[in-house]
Length: 455
Ligand code: PFF
Image (cartoon, rainbow, N blue to C red; front, side, top):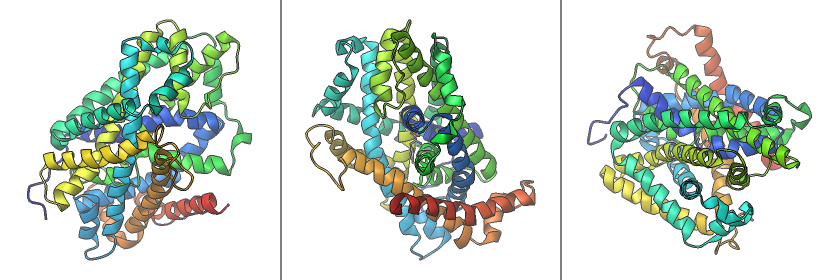
């Protein structure tokens, strides 16, 4: 029972853009290109698409369906659909996962604020050609990255405070539209550089010899992270969705949009890296890992014509993408605080800012003064990244699918899925999806999961 009528999204377009905004983020621009670089280019894209259709789409449909039917934050959503059961603790786990993700996500969000500021004042040249050193010096500084982390978190909170329609929906619409226009401009610049086509070839000609067990796991983790599934964000957004929306169409649309964007972001980055390597007569290094965006790219921008403009646009795009994802993460925690702890939206945002700010500060410091502190052999930042993307999200996804496929009765699943029969979805499609949710997705996730930890 909530004390105020719940807000809903105002329009279908707004809802879709908010969900797409959650999915499109650092995962697409920062993580996807280097994961692809490490795992064999097109071969990785292929695996990714398979994971997406077979495992992630069913999980997304489950999460969407549970959120819309339960009309609440993850904790009480499960409580409403399975009263008195332990399932609500899964909801609580999702809230916790979102808070953890937000805590390390806002550190990288902070880096993008700093790189945007630097590109505006043309400060890349300070690096005197050593971009790795300048990035390393920045992230290991005890204060600077911390301040940027808090600026990023504050920016996110400032949007969330305005609520679902005026905050999340309105800002997602504006920011995602800007993001698309900007990234297309950067793609055009990147593709028109000499030698860029080699990079395109790398992205689209698969090398099947590179497909290994590792590629599978990497592709699954990337797909979960990129689609924002398994940790309650889709569930929370879906709880603000009107009953007449088509769950399958929305989920498919968001997955498609997110994947297209990852490929477009790849086209903005990989060909530019190839081109500059070609001009310098060296081998392109697209597997540079997390440093690809913050080390390799500033070097690329500094060497290309109109590089300053491209750098400003690129880091602005990175920031917009990061903010629209961070708001979805914060909303999970905020909705939980508002509804379960009975606090106002303002207080909930403030509390979330403090909690994630403190955990985020530790993550940020783990690149500097706390570098020697390890949990299970990982720095704090890597620890939160690892346990959320590789453990909490896949387990969350698995349990969401199990709940939708086994705990909700088949009649209820199909009732929600077809909007009580109002949508004319052919029965074979509904049933195929039902069995993907009930059997294929849980078994698939479990197998990949076991393979990761016991092989
Ligand atoms: N999908 C976001 C990205 O690709 O950057 C990250 C993310 C957002 C993960 C929201 C999880 C989440 F709940």
